[in-house]
Length: 299
Image 1 (cartoon, one colour):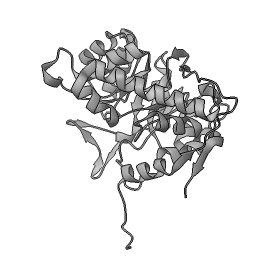
Image 2 (tube, helix red, strand yellow):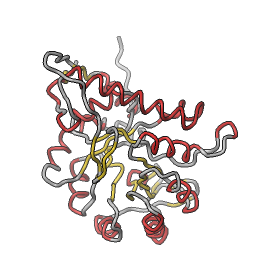
Image 3 (cartoon, helix red, strand yellow):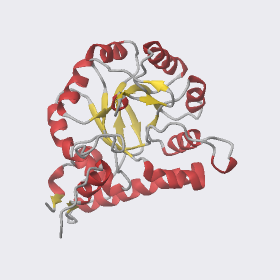
């Protein structure tokens, strides 16, 4: 059979994730507890919502998609993330009561970056951060919904961290080099991600996770991961390879679009239940205990 080249990072990521298998360890195992602690607060599971932007109202429902999944995050007690939006919409997100991290784009308008970070803190965000993997586009600096993006230096990122009392999260880390820089500037967490395949041939986040985990040992920086997370098994693999939590993404959209808050709540609960089942079946009673010893790679 002829070899066909694959440049789609999402397909590469999916193939890599599916090549990781799990062995059973049933004797002396107990029902697992999936509760976890992230950025200094207790949550019911190591599952995060994605930092979505620009979701409309589905089927004419009262709240837009961002508000709906934030309400579900509150109901399920999971750490909530949102992305690009103006301040008035972010206030609506905060008003849902979800513990929410606002991920700000790397705007060329630096005053807008600082305004959105400050506003988030003022209205009660749980955390803030920046989406560094939207800095570049194929023709230079990226333009997102008419907004120009700009390069971000280590000093600029450090100034954002120092400007807020909230935990700062850097999203879009896909190398040990960037992970170490994030620790050096005082970020409290990173999200290991290729942003749904923006970079051709991007390394799968789970492939680079172990090296990032080792590089950040002793720094206190928590490691989150996204891209292709669709099940409790995916979350389990992410935790085993070094993540503290994993964010679902497009896998959540069907449930959100069809059934709103109830759909997302059920989706998150199903992911959590499968995670508990796999933990129980591999001898890990608590999230913090999970390591890679029960993983096998087909390659």
